[in-house]
Length: 257
Image 1: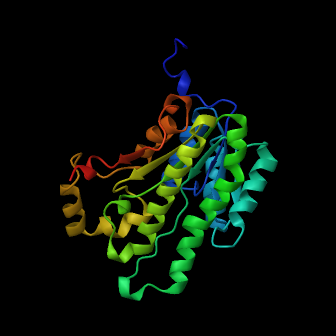
Image 2: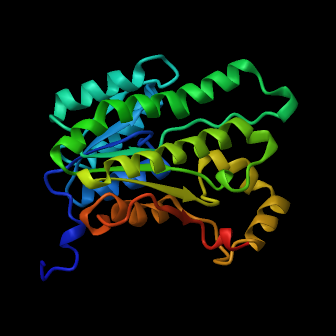
């Protein structure tokens, strides 16, 4: 055992693919993994703003690179996996952070919104898992981290499809955790609470809604993207090697009720 208690958190020689890594939670996790020594494939959906954001992440992480892939397009997940492996030779850590959330009343959920959320949140997940996990298992080491949501426990009727996609993603991780544990590949789910992100900005900007939610968070503050970095590093490193199939809340105690 190393005398350095932080050695197990190091990721030197590892390659991580973080989807949706251009800003906020994805960016914070990418910076944490890169700061621990990993080469990071910084995924973004494409477009000038996304490219600029991803470039700023790469600039902070020497040896890393940005990759564009629109997961709403069929086959984009498989294409991304091939491109990253062609660039870096392998992927040891897969962080499935990219997702979309389309808010619609239950009775008005459109087929287009359903299909788009399924494509981005689930189809791309399956593509990446199928493309990358077998090679992790063959090498005897791998980490898969899904970024879930409190919607898994407390689904809102206006987010029915999004909540269902996050729950299914988590369930897939549980199934694969059983299948690949003996081959050194772990699967864990990290569920953020109320984090100050663009996605939550409208809800948190409403004084009444903000006060109502804050009252239900024992920590008495909203989370920041950086609050996900430490848990992610634990679950993506040797420090978390014996954690498999976990569902970890980073929510300031919100799930305590």
